[in-house]
Structures are given as C-alpha cells and as structure tokens.
Length: 547
Ligand SMILES: [Zn+2]
Ligand SMILES: [Zn+2]
Image 1: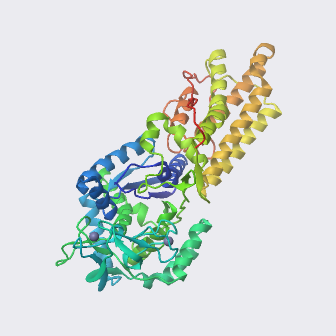
Image 2: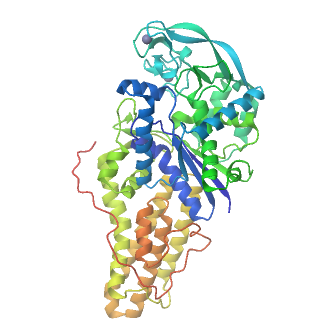
Image 3: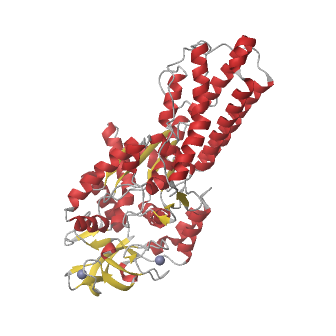
C-alpha cells in the first residue's frame, strides 16, 4: 500500500465546463484515482475552483456582474457537474475560501523570508483612458514568440508560452482598445533564475514523463529562467500580506497552485485529523501526480516545483501527465472563444458513463484529438454497448433465466483455461497502462477482453449445451460469469456506474470497494444468488450529421 496524491488542474469559475477540460484533466485523474483505490492504495484527490485573477474580473465586467456573483454561480455549477459525472474528488475546494487565503499568504511570506521573493521597481502597462493598470488579461497584443495577434497579457493561446503583459508587441487595452503606456509600480518577483540547476536535477530524477512535457520543460529552462512578478495591481484576489501594499494581490497563478496544498490541509481539517495531509506532502514515499492540460505545463513543471523547492518541506511531483488538446472540428475547445461542448448539457442528454467512455477512448494523451458526435455515437453503440454491455447482459440474462444463481463448474476445458489466462493477461496489461497514465491503451485491453468473451460465448453456445450437456453448460456459464466479474473490476475506474450495476447483477453485496483488485480477484462462489438483470448501456438513437 502506498499514498498517492492526485492533483487536478483548477478550472476558472468564470464559465461552464466543457468536455475539453474533462478529457484533458478531470477524467484521466479520476480514472487514475479510482484505479489506485481499487488496488488498495491510499488516495487523496484534490482540486477546486480558481476564483481569482483577471479571467474572473474580465468575465464579470462582460456580464455586468460582481466577481463574487460570477464565482458563486460557476463554482456551484462546476462542483455539481463534476459530481454528476462521477469525478471522485476527496475535496473540491475554492480559492476564495479564507483557509486557502491563509495558506497562500503564509507560503508567500515563507519564500519572502528565505529570500526567494523580492520587491522590485517594475514597469507595468497603464491605460490613461481607463485610468488603471492592465494586468494579464486586461491587455492584448502580438505574441513576441509566434506572432499571434490575439495573445493575452498572461499567455499566448497559439504557442502556449507564458507571457508578461510587458512582453506583448503592439499592446492594446482590452477595455477601450487604446494603446497603454508604461508606468512605474512596485511588484514582488519570484527569483526563478535561482532554481535552474535544481529544476534540471529534479527533472533528471523523474521517470516515465511524457516526452512532450519533458521537452517543453527542458527547453524553457535552457532558454533561461527569468524572475517573474508574482503580484499585480488588482483588487480581486488574495491581498499581498504586507503593510503598505493595498490594491495589490498575489498573481492568480502563484496562489492557485498553492490550492493543491491548502485543499489537502482543508480535507484533513474537515475529517477531524488535521495532520493527515502530511502523509501526502511530506512522506518521501508518497507519489504525487498533477493532471493538467498542456497550456498549464510551465506552471506545474517549473513555477510550482520552484516554489516547492524554495519552501523545502514539501514533496515534488512524481509525474505531470499533461494532456494535449481535445479539438472540436479541428478547433481548440475554448471558453473564452465559445468553442466547445458543455459538460452540463451533455449530462442532461447522456449517462455519465457514456460520456466517460467516449472521452477515455479519444483522450488526447500524446497528440491533439478530435471530438466528433458521429464517433461519440459509434463508440457508444458499437463498442461500449455492443461489445461490453451486451456480453455482460447476454451472460447474465441466460444465467438468471436458467440457474438464478452461480452454477458449479465441472472440469475445465482448454477453452475455459484460455479464458482465465486471457483475463489475467489483459488485467495485467491494463494495470501497467494505468500505472503509466496511458488511459486510452488501458481501455483497449478492456475491449479486447470483452471481445474474447463474446467469441467464447458464441462458440460454446451454452443455450444448446443446456439441453445436450447440462454439466458442460454450467462450466461454460461459470467461466463466462467469472469473466464478467473481472470486467466489472477492470472497467470500474472508467465507467464506475456500469461496473457497480454489473457487480450487483453478479450477486455481490457491498459494491465495488477499495482494495477489491488485489493479487487475486474476489472469488465467485458457486451458489451465489444472482441479482436482477437490467440493460447496462443505452443505445444512442440521436441522428447526428458528422460534426
Ligand atoms: Zn505565441
Ligand atoms: Zn483602456
């Protein structure tokens, strides 16, 4: 048994979640967390709403609302939608909570005290027309790296580079469109340049990182790490915890990544064991994983590790399995540009497991992937339903009708033994894939096992055997039921509801619980009374022109 910390990128609470964010971070994290719980490991899975910074205030101004109203509405919506989808957070917290604020401010003060943060005079963009500083998203312009003309002051969406507003060429005020001018201000800087060597050592000591994540990070460090301002002239956020700095806040990215820590501490506090978080942050044997989209890589492989190195008493990440993007008709899902399929609407139309199944099958692990409705329907009807759902359904309907309980097997034939071997083989390959965060590959093992099961069931034809050779029929059904038991456990990380239903139909009580997937899977005792059988996967009848 080991401790596994699962950290999931924090969605901004400024608009509805779309499927790109689910396939990019939430779903792979949940599959991973559920897998480790099944294996008997201790898992802490945390995330929450990112409620500060200019993404929130810009949205609030657009909707003519207060930032408080915006974050309240979307935090609630996100928490609800994620729960409906079955994303099993131990705590889904929020950065506006006073306990997060305290942890973030203490973190800042600790780095300041150690000399990793210092105050400097800085030139920041100021709009004379609007009479205000223009941090982050309040300024747009041309990206100095790739030439995109719609880069924002915090990041270029096209090339993924993290920017400072002062980096932009031809900057313009987002509010009035006029070109801003530089004005002197005083900001606190994180001395990133001091961490280059340590970060390279840290990268060298990591195993199994995705090549794109590693390369992106190494290149960033090789280009030279610049000290970065981590405070802003902005009112919406966590105030700089020093006298004389009114009107300045911690940069949203600096404090949001601290949310992984504050949420772990809050989880421990709420459980009544206030020190329990330490098992996940200070025990050197604990593994920590950060599930994020590729646009968040530098914050999780450079800035956050540098902050942790500066802090000294906390674990660095074991792996950062960042996903590429899920595209809709070739375009990036983007909340700010209104491209995408909303999770909430999808949940109104489909079962959570149908959404989970399709997204797991197209997960953009090593390259961008395309979402299409035609493929959604095809994967559901021809794979999830036809291959997996129907196998379990056929076996259970026949078993229930003929025996009502698990029959007692006789001597096993070569084919029966092969089915057992296939179950072990696919289970092992699935586990290896999941350990390495290769979720698409893992799902293929499940489908392959179900295909093998279908062939076996068709070839053995137990409905004929029941009349001709009843003892043999019982052995075949026993073997097929055992395969369904294995499938129920193997698919639990991906499609938990379908898995629970299968488990109950097999007559087990107690549900799919932690530690169920041990060295050996639980016995299927002969004589166990089967539960009522119901269809597992709905057919999608919706007519859809290929999107
Ligand atoms: Zn760019
Ligand atoms: Zn302006």
